[in-house]
Image 1 (cartoon, helix red, strand yellow):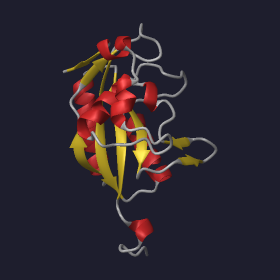
Image 2 (spheres, rainbow, N blue to C red; image 1 turned 90 degrees about the vertical axis):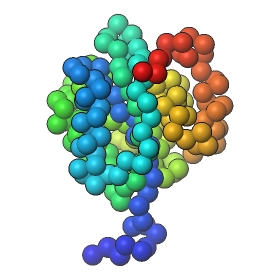
Image 3 (cartoon, rainbow, N blue to C red; image 1 turned 45 degrees about the vertical axis):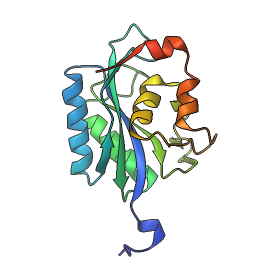
Length: 173
């Protein structure tokens, strides 16, 4: 039995990016949030919805994305497993990389740590988050003081480093 007062068992804060580019995208995201909470992942803050082109192939259906700040007692790989099970519940199939999907959940940050777990199955902070407008802008909206745990660059500078094209290609809805 775990002791609730030990440091390793205390709730951790994490940031998750949730997106959808198939079906009723907003409903899919709201249902994904419900599934997270049903799995004892407490949502503390939620960004607005953002509409952006599909990445890396802009010819695929557009995405709607949000970022949520959560509190969890799950270890990083356990959190990843819960997120993957939720994606699977929505029909996610990982046969084709970056294929359209009803639900995509990425762990952006876990307790401000730098992690590389299970033979690169989970890399935190998310390795491509710094170039993704659909992660940076919603993250900036909910935590203007957030700092990248590996590069130590703050969110303001990460957003400012986005190209004008990237900034113009995303819309808060």
